[in-house]
Length: 410
Ligand SMILES: [Zn+2]
Image 1 (cartoon, rainbow, N blue to C red):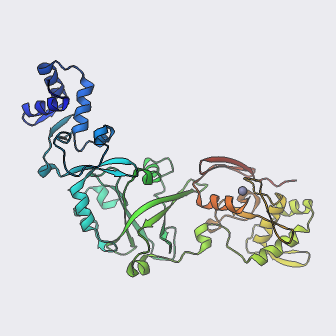
Image 2 (image 1 turned 30 degrees about the vertical axis):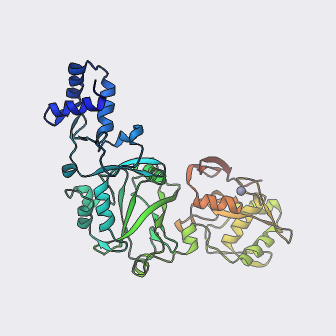
Image 3 (image 1 turned 45 degrees about the vertical axis):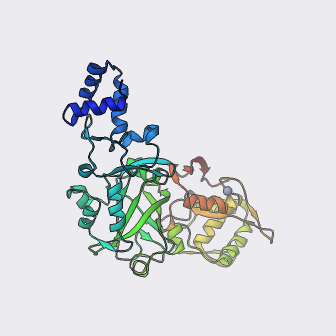
């Protein structure tokens, strides 16, 4: 009695080198009275070099760079038919290990890609089409910024065109972080967005090609590692990617990298001098709780205004934040912590819900009072706002859900 592998191989050869699953199953039944259909299907899938699911079989859970005679002898033609695998025609298919899981890929193409792509060299889309072994210029290739590499599941060509004026909404900063936002219709539930968030664990290679508006060709800048996403209240999502390797060469640096001001980067309050902030807090501290609540209720909507308290002229933004901190007891609204200062006062921070750079104002419904740890987590962590109104904000931060009151305490 031959093994299942021998049976399958024999069946395919007896039909002239190409067979449907049905024909193979029928052959095993007729010649060997083998009636377990599922075992035949499993054998076909596990032996097909281009079947992405074959990594689920234990003997495929290892690195393969040369076809093995026993296990790598079929090539899938469609959903339910196979032909005998011929590396000269079909290319060299193998299995690689990435971050503890396995992936089916084209060994020969990876070699070509590896030797053809040179960091910080310039490439047109046509160049890349050739390098990645794609046979035609499909509409995706012409238009989309995100192109899946057909020969290695999950690997992606990532095209970015930065605006030529100012910093804009997308940039590469000096630490190699690419700030990027998908198209408006791509919300956080979009499968591609989800896939990107899991790309590090899956070991997906995301090749970055980047240029400035008006350039014809793209720099090849290495690969992207997922860092975090920020979702705004209007459900737009922003990605922070780490470019690897980093730092880049001089040409790339001077053409692509921007000095991004911290306030834009953090999307938080412009860092006013600490002294000015402290002076404001001291003065606001002298107000009665009722006075604080009344002043919050009648805050001027004009962000550039100055407010006079006890004869002192103070910036409206700083006053507003101080009033909110005072009104909420100088405690982190997530963990309740406040930091004691040497002079006996308390230290706490004000975090914008809608970023100042996006028009978010210093008013009770847009400010959270947070400790430094939670402030940074709020800015850099994976954040999804679930509910936001005058009274409260409900959000998910790195997997934890919080509901925080935004009301004026009376
Ligand atoms: Zn906290």
